[in-house]
Length: 102
Length: 222
Image 1 (cartoon, rainbow over the protein chains, first blue to last red):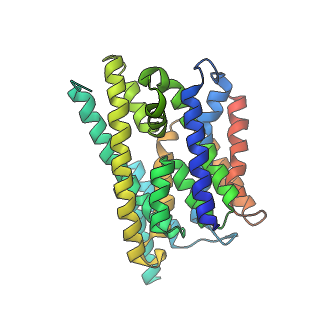
Image 2: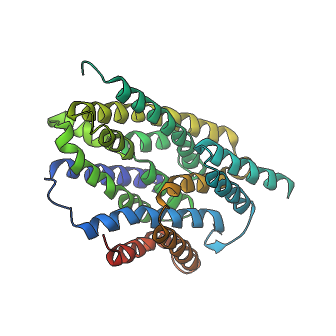
C-alpha cells in the first residue's frame, strides 16, 4: 500500500476513534486542568513547527527562498486582520512572482 | 428539527461558508503534497478535521513517514475528543446518529453550539447539527475544487502554492497566539523543529514539538 493510502486510512481511523471516544465516555473524565492546558498548547506547538518546516526546509536542508517572502506577506495580512483568502492568496502571489522573476 | 432559530441558522451558515475557503486551500495543499484528487477528497470525507488533515499532508509532503503523519494528525485530533465529551450531553444521540454526531464534532460545530448557550439546549443542538453538517458539505465541495485546481496548475512553486500552504497553517495558528506565553511556545517550536530538521527523519521535528507543549502546559498555572 502506498504511503498516501496508509496515512489517509490511519489518520481517518485515529481521528474518528478519538471523537467517538469523546462521545462515549462520561464527562467527568479528562477534566484534569493540567491535561486540558497541555491539550490547548499542542496545536500551537505543532502548527508552529509545520509553518517553520514548510517555509524554511527542503529535503532535510534549511533553505531561504521565495516562500519566506510569501509568508512575510501572510504575516502582514494577519496583523492587518485580513480575511483568510487574502492571507493565502497574498502569500501565493508574492511567492509565485519571485519564483518567476528571481 | 422544527422551528429552527433564525439567528442560530444564520451563524451556522456563515461559519460553514467561511470554513469552505479553508477546504479550497486544503485540496490544493493535499495535491501539492502528492496525494491524488480522490485521496484528497477521501481525507476530507473520512477525517474531516482541518488541522489534522493539513498536518498529515504537510508531514508526508515534506518527506515524513506515514507513522509520523498519522501521529501528528492524531495529536492535533485529541481536542476533538474533548469536544465530543462536551457535546455528548447536548446532542444526546444514539446508535447511528451518535456515529454521525461524532464525525461532525469539530472546532466550529462545538463553537457555535456553545455560543447558543444563552438561548437554550434546543438552540445549542440546532447550532451543533447545522454547523457540523454545513461545514461538512462545504468543506468537501471546496476540497474537490481545490484539488482539481491544483492538479490543473502543475508545478506548485510556479503558482506560489509552496508558500500558500504554510500561510494557511499560519492562518489556523494565528488566533491561538493571543497570550505571550503562547507566542514564546510558538517560537520555541519553530527553533526546535528547524534545529532538528537536518538531524532526524522528516516528520519527527514536527512531532517532537508536542513535548514542548507538555513542558509548557505542565508548568503553567491552569
